[in-house]
Length: 365
Image (cartoon, rainbow, N blue to C red; front, side, top):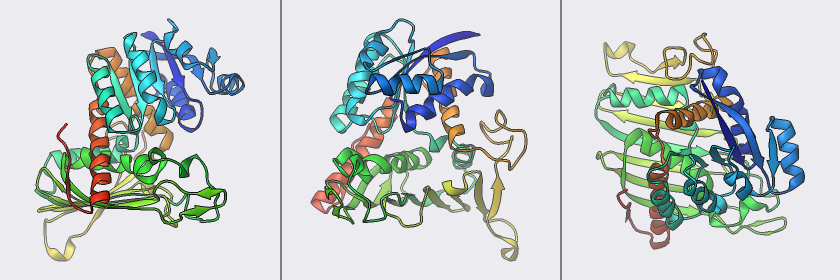
């Protein structure tokens, strides 16, 4: 098996998650390519060195260009704020290096579209992790197999409460569209809907700021959004996202209704999926709770015990496995930059709808 030098730009929340994943993925999945933690980059020399020591990288730098251009760094993970995504990816692709970029891809529609063009002919991936749980992968299989018949309705949410308290001060999260709910949280929701249901044709959205004033100043972005939508397959849908949903910690959840059954899932119980089938006597019908186990996708490498469960970090390890597989085979693995662009197109349509207070079409990818 061969080694591959990994460079990660960003050492904070997601930088740590990707570093841990790259350290563990070879042992968990017995990957053909084994990551070597070559270099990490953060905003200062001090923080870069601190992350290097904590995560086990060989070297550190505060200059992302030095990381990208280093000959021992063979693949790049971008875990920075959105405003740096495009520039880093462009530099990496110019050198023929594979790139995995954190969501959402770039700061707006124009940047995302440019990133799709520059990724053409290169290994590229957008880091949407929640849709990679064994339960989510199983849900996708149930839908593709027609287990609940023709889909008639989809309800999805990504609701959290990390800014529910109006006494919390302003921060980077409360400034700028890219850091608002629809820019930061809702992309996970949109990616979920696209993965499970396919393309969205049109939307009707409302976006609002619940707490406009916080200690430290004005809030310049949104707290929550709701959206009606129509999918290309004909199904109706409703999507809701909030960072002020009191009591919700990781409310990444969906309900899907079909002509032969239904599926329910909630990320706060990520190792279970609920399945209803319209079979047998009415008196004995009901939702069945299915605990994930080795029979479900990407579960067995972590644990041989059904119901023992996987966690958040395991999602990132699965993501790392998919990225390494794409590099090894030379074939991109979903979701690519093009799929990331599809998410930004839904975001753009939602913003247009909120501004015009009218239904808006989502452009075809």
